[in-house]
Image: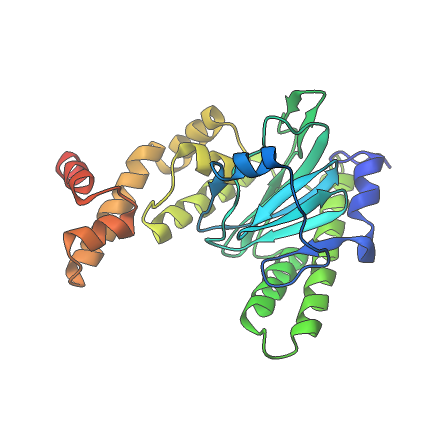
Amino acid sequence: MKNAYFNDNDLAVMLSGESLKVVSSIESDITTASPSGEYLDWINKSCDWHYHKEAMLVLSGNSFFSLENSVYPCQTGTFFLIDSKEKHDLYYPPFYDNFQHLWFRIINKTIFTSTPYSRINGKEKNHRTFNYTFDEHNYAGQLFINAWSRFTSNQTVDGKFNWLYLKNAISGLLLELCRAGNDVGMERVPPIELHHKKVINTVTEHIRETGGKNLDISRLAYIAGYSKFHFARLFKDVTGFSVLEFINLSRLNRYKELSNEGFNKKQIADELGFSSPAAFSRWLKDNN
């Protein structure tokens, strides 16, 4: 049966099981690399961090990827685990070509994934031909989330066992996604409207929890796996607010909480992600 999400080469990587190489900031199946000076110059200006977790599977290509100040070979069959607040590459260097990466974005008990990002012969191919969500009722998704949490929180107890347990959970996650691709067209996929609503509700909860810190429409659309225009329209349809209105509302609520807890203006500005107390004061004046 033809898979709606992946071609045969993709499936061969995703179903390779024990052959997958897993990399995290704590443990790694591969050693660090010595990248080119060109890459080092780029990464010095192109780091990112965020509150949600991410994971990335290299479906094809050879390059580098930095995680928490270490650089690793980014080769076919490597699975990277990027924990909350960990520094990593911000997008891709312009000089890398002919690769395909499958990304997972994790918020609480929900995992978003969508069409792999590709750059082939200098052209970016990211058409979002599928969006898939592992929700709280999906066994494979929850096993992966729980195994990752168990690994990061129990390093002194059965660390090697937890690493093996996590790697097996990754294999299960990929297997489930391949199965979902086989199910397309067989009436096993939730209605698209229900999927959109579930995605937007998960994103709004993330905005509330973070108070909107380090979030904008570009990042939120990326997490959800939509274009900015499509995400903005869906967000308005589901919540009744624009993205900026909802972020500002969440920030105001978080501001009131912090103020009641006795935080001063500078501390609140830092907590909400403003560049200075003056910038925070201007925002507060405009939104009160």
